[in-house]
Image (tube, rainbow, N blue to C red; front, side):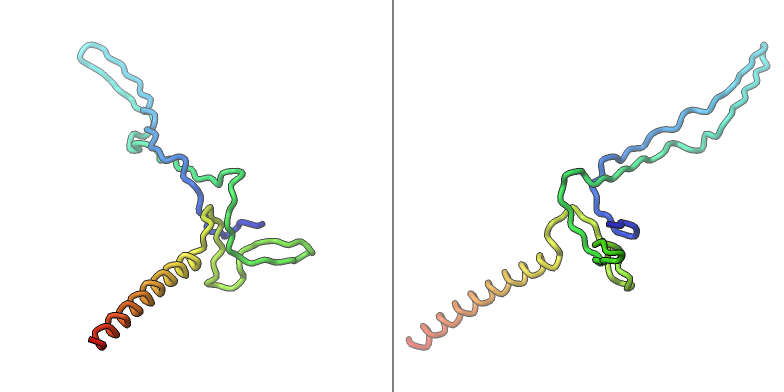
Length: 126
């Protein structure tokens, strides 16, 4: 698999702000006269460190293009623009989730229609 160009949905394991070291200074005092030299910049407050990983041993889902170029099966970025290349830890495809939601809605709608039909039939008979 060649992951170049993929949207990788990984787990964030580090997100912290580390303060910058204080600038070095050199000070001299002689009576009322004092001199203070600072080396380095003190405008940076700190640095943000962030790290994401794909844990070893975890199954992943890959959406991309399969190619057998060179006699070896490879997953790679699709050549057509607009097609996605995703590496994710999630197992359910959004299309499967959407299908399950539509199925649930259709089941409720059919049960509601059947109940309304039965109520209409009972009212028509009386």
